[in-house]
Structure formats: C-alpha cells, structure tokens
Image (cartoon, rainbow, N blue to C red; front, side, top):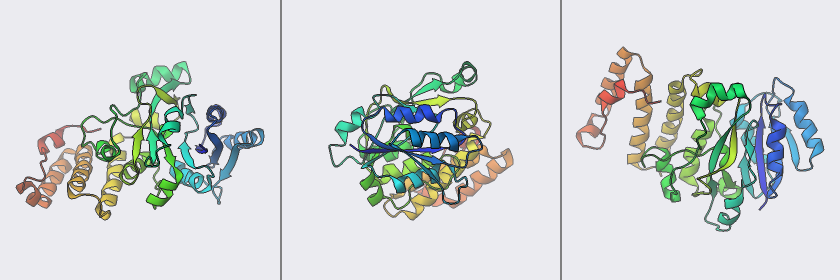
Length: 316
C-alpha cells in the first residue's frame, strides 16, 4: 500500500510535529502532505522545517497563500497526492501504530472503496481534561456495529437506529474510487465540512468497517480546537446543524439516485433542527408551514411527524 496522508495545518504549530511523526511511523505512508492554511502562528515555519527534515513530507499552500479552511485544504491535498490510497489527519490529532492494520487486509478486495475505524481521546493538558472531560470523557468515536456498505449512508442519516460516528482521522480511501465516483470532494464549509462529505461519500462509495472496538487514532483535545467550541456550545450547535442538513437536503434533491423516502427523511431532519432552534412564535409558524406544505404526504401516511415533539425537544 502507498498511502498519502493529507494534513491541513492552521494555528497548530504546537501539535503538528507530533501529528506528522505519528503518520511517518506507519510504513504504509508514502508521503505526508502539509497544507499550510495561512496560520496566524508560526506553523508555516514549523512545516517548512518538517519538509526539510523528512523526505516523505511535502509542504503546500493555496495559490493565493490565504486561508481557505480545512475542506478546501484537504481538496488541495487530494489533487496533489501521489499515493494509491488517501488518509486524513488533523494537525492536533495523531495516529496510533495500528492505524492501517485492518486496511492492509481489507483493501486487497477491489470492491472496498474505503475503510473507517475508531477514534480515541487524548488530553494535551490537565486544564484541557478538566474543561472538556464532560464532553468527551474516555469514549470512542466509533460505529457501534459492523454494517454492510449499503447500510452506512442510511445509518448516518439516522434511519438505522443508534449507528454511531466515524472520524476523518480514521478514514482511508482508495484514491481511484474517490476520483471516479465523486465530482465534488469537500465543500467550502467552515463547520461540519467533514460530516457533509461523509454523507455523500457513503452514498457513492463502498465503505467498510475496520477496527471499531479500539482506537486507531486519537483526537487531541486542547483549549483552542474547533470541535471543543462547538461541543461546549461556544458555537451554537443547532445553528451549525441547520446549515449542515440544508446542504445535505439540497444535494439529495438534485441527486436522482436518492430514493424518495430518503429525501423525505433528510427534509424532516432539516425541518427538525429549524424548529428546535426557532423562538416560540417562529416554531408555531414553521410547524404550520410544514403541515401545509406536506399535508398530501401526511394524509397518505408517508410523512409521520410528531410536531409536538419537534416543537419542544432540543435535537442537538
């Protein structure tokens, strides 16, 4: 296997060396692509030093040298990758030595387009653990059962009960499958760009479970990473999820291969977050609007919404 690891870097000078060296410990890694995204710290200098120190490390920037976000940075990495397989790593996270253990065997099957695994938690300081332990604890981010590729897309949509999650750090893709089956990779979103990508990815590609019961990579938790701001509600999570589900809804409506029942489910999810995030008067207006717009579906028994639940329960 020849794996290109794509690693966006923004304001992570303290952590990126550890991230890079954790990837280089894996003999399957043929290159680490550092996409320096106009960081306000000295990340560019640190990345340059890493590129000089290690033959497998390449440093890239966007053509205009400006900040474009993690999604666009990953796209730049995909465009420049030379490996047969693609893996991703955030600059404040790191791989474990077993990162590609399952992938080596699974990718021998040409039907396997991608493999996902479990993510653990590492606290970079005592202060970070005190602040964010209630958010992450020692829990794995993982998919709870082994699912067939056909079940991954509806599972992420919430149509398969308690499905779980996988992380960008634990995803490995066959590059040829990604390039041949998807026209758009990561979209230009500043929040949830990876989640939006996962939805479309699992629709077009055959994704298989790797190691789900123990971590193959670790989420690095500190005081300044984006996910902690969202999870601790410094950034209101309902608002970001409305935008995420709007993106998914708009894509699904344009994709002829998405079935009508799935489109209805996606529409419901978007509506649910809109209602949950609205003030009381707007909740009532939205419920009336959706009742009017979707009455034929409700009448035909195709659209079962509990509006009382939607108007009172916080969905995020």
